[in-house]
Length: 236
Image (cartoon, rainbow, N blue to C red; front, side):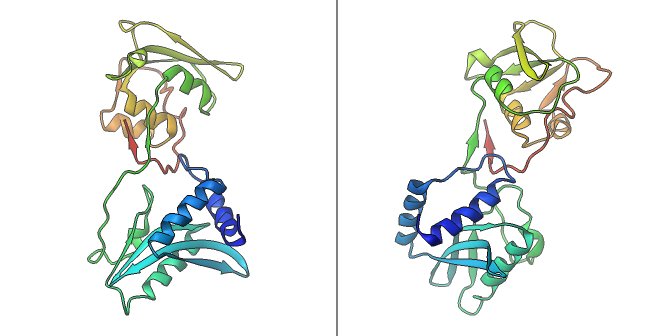
């Protein structure tokens, strides 16, 4: 990597450490990105504070439209500085387009009458093996076993009742059969969101995406899967 790309890589890695689902980039990925941005006649703006790089923005201007291909920052203050940089072009652009990550709150800074926000998924996630995903993904320590009925119309091996528990820090699981009694029922997309921290147990329960099979003294799932800031935008 050349020096400029290395600076961008360092900012990018700092940005991704706070998120789930980020794509790791090596030298080859950066080369492909650079080739694509070159075709778009894009330029890169790097924001530094006290000679320490804090953000970068790759953008191009076509007529009166400023298109931000990527804007990566180490904190909210750096992001606001990038937005000020965009605003500084108001004398010769009438519109700026930027694909922000899911859950971004930049719209709070903008004039609501002059901004349009739409969700365009570009990174999807799906659990293809419930048992393996349970064993591999980090969750909080379990206090008691839980039995979950997973419904998956596409992958039959996920369509079952699973008993999940933990023994001395090791994740354990058992298939009980589709007719077994369960504590919770959910579709595979809801299990994916729960496991990856995209939605909390309470949110999924409120939406009807999780159904309780019986009354429990405690809610085993409530604090088991912490919510995360995800780059993933579609779950299926």
